[in-house]
Image 1 (cartoon, rainbow, N blue to C red):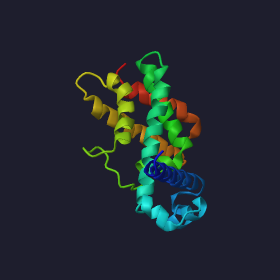
Image 2 (cartoon, helix red, strand yellow):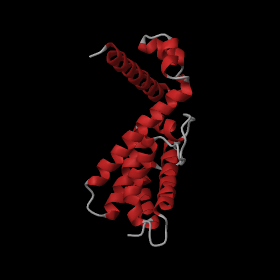
Image 3 (cartoon, rainbow, N blue to C red):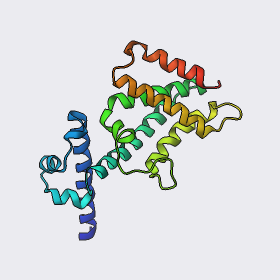
Length: 192
């Protein structure tokens, strides 16, 4: 291995450590607790080392969001891969999405609530974000209905899931009705 390859590997490892530490701190104490000073202390590198990887907290949030998008896409695809039909796929998708949001609140915030400097629904949208949307579209496109653009339907269904995730987390919805909400969403929005 050349010196250059070793340096690149070490740099990538430091970057993974920064992102993992930021994510851990955010999940434990919230995003307000994530500062370059605290990250530098936790990973035992100087703040200039952090700034050599990320220009600031905004870029760190963006990196966490991209990681989360890849994880969410994988979770949705795993959940839908074993479903036996369109209804089961959409139900599995909804449950996987809501479960991911509940288990990873700080990552979910990085994806959909905070400014991570990422472009959404644009030509320059990063591939992990496009792939997360594609994971939804794969199951939802087939149940959009005649004359309904699959991408538009996916956006509306996704917005509904986001609303459920956000309102549930804020304690605005009764937890015991979660399964019924998913069933209602699937029944009323999809053409099966």
